[in-house]
Length: 396
Figure 1 (tube, rainbow, N blue to C red):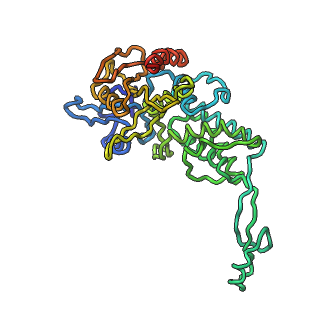
Figure 2: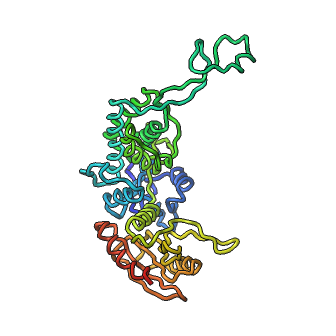
Figure 3: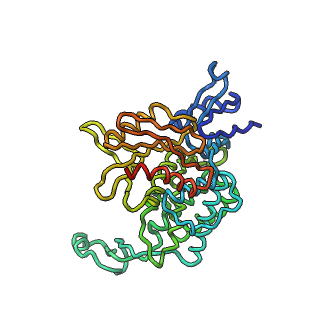
């Protein structure tokens, strides 16, 4: 029996025997996931072993023949859940405590199970429906007749009718169906969790909800009323599942989907949302907004803190989800360029660990500092401590 692949840890290189991965499997990893993984083929440089390193992504990637490459996060699972809640403005009261969730598989399976449970509860009550206008050719009159079309084709016996159909086959339900489908096929969903997920998927299909490809972005910014307000947590979970589940891949007896979370992107979105919530009313932030500094030059800083009164930039924050103990020269140069272009005198490189080597340096008119938002501690405490370090610079 083939030995399982070792579990990777984000950003940490892992070497293993060349017997555990075929040349074909390695080439597919390199071609399809090269943006997420550094793949080094067996060579004298690697002592004729495979060497893989995650570029900040965590999750599960199907390899083939039932094998799955697992990539473990360096931060606690509950910190990932908390970051996700804040990054996407999820109300914590919508979800019960994650009892027994200790791994990424537990986290994904817990979310998928929650979606299935809530979908089945809604199915028992009846799915939310809307009236949609449809046009069809019928043997009887229904709704409004298309008289012009009938005159043009007098030999046609059936009637062209336009009518209102009260249907459950609407986007609210299609989003949930799409999320249940990818969860049931995900390499991260346990077999125990997959059973209720598949059952909920089947029940939705039996209720005439059609399976179509849906964009995760459609789950956000939706309008709810008293008849469908319970869809909000289901769409929140659907957003996570659809955002982080890849295309279907053959693996053993069934097709599996990759599940990957980009921790640098999640950290960046989380920090921007947290600052937007916690900054004093006198300030506002721009997050990931392109700023032009000339006809052919533009930058996209992670976070720019501005005075609300006149829009002046008072602080530039560049998040760096990295494990090195000291800032790279390129990172310092990058944030200084952002600040200089914005005519801002304060710049911060923000890291997710408490033991990062502090830096405070003056580069021209810009003061550059390293600050931390430790993810292995209480995030509220970490955030308050960060804000206390930032506020004096913003007040200048």
